[in-house]
Image (cartoon, rainbow, N blue to C red; front, side):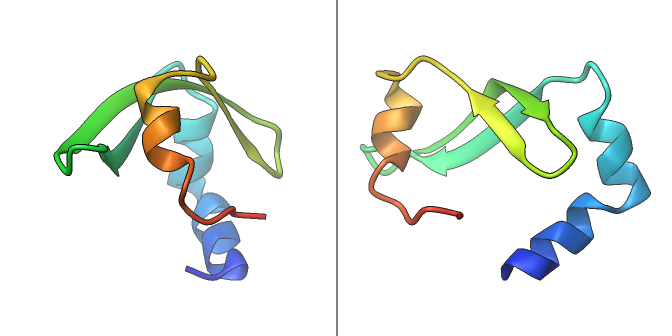
Length: 71
């Protein structure tokens, strides 16, 4: 997805409602062993960015680190 497409999705009413709710976010990714993972994560919606919070040395960080940056 291009940046504008992501912004368009995030600005839809349902997305805005979910980002301001108490429902935990989840991230899905492929683990280092090739198996799929879905885990809850902490996050903060600043109004322009989704800030994801987790322990720096966690399994998901190690699995996601080699991927592209979103900025």
